[in-house]
Image (cartoon, rainbow, N blue to C red; front, side, top):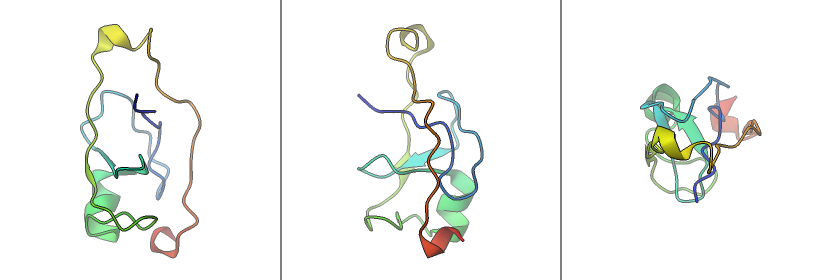
Length: 80
């Protein structure tokens, strides 16, 4: 089950579960589309994997499978 992290790890922008601007790698590092495209060139600075659009969990399943509320910030120099 994806965590659906609530924010971009670079800029801190909110990324609610229904956001079409969320990008993730295979380890669920989460970035907004702007940071993924401009700062990171589509590559996760943590693992080197590709960043892809995060799936949107159907609204009727959010109560049973809630998104994470833990905000994560990257310490990677690409996000400085």
